[in-house]
Amino acid sequence: MGRRAATLARHGLPPGCLTVEVTETAVFGGGHALAAVAALSAQGIAIALDDFGTGHSSLGLLRTCPVDTIKVDKSFVDGLGGTPQQEAIVTALAGIAATMQLDLVAEGVETAEQAQRLVELGYPHAQGFHFARPMPADSIDAMVEQGSRQAA
Image (cartoon, rainbow, N blue to C red; front, side, top):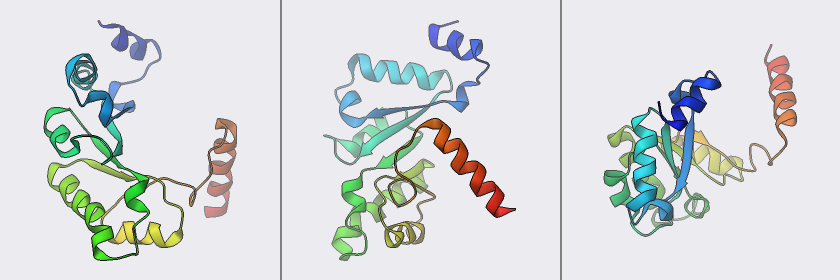
């Protein structure tokens, strides 16, 4: 059993419960980083490409790197609600993710309008200041608990 698998087993976590985020530039050149990502994926650990679209060869990585999730960079989300040209990449990535059966996350969502447009374009997940600012773990627990009480 490898060190990663042993660590997961020690903590009682199945590999599918863990997602490792890597940037495109970390795996772009192949080599040790790409081999490490491939080894994690082979163990059942999910791989997310963070800041997608800002690296050297994003689309090529979708074929060479074992990816489960694309996290679309904020720089593309910022153009939502503008011209069709500004939305073209976000729209195209939604189609690519759907065809390749990849999870899709939009990063850097700051407004309700951006969030709504992303839903319209087929983005099931988003993160950013519109939803919450970064906070300590105990604050997240309290926020989730408060939301549960309000929903009841």
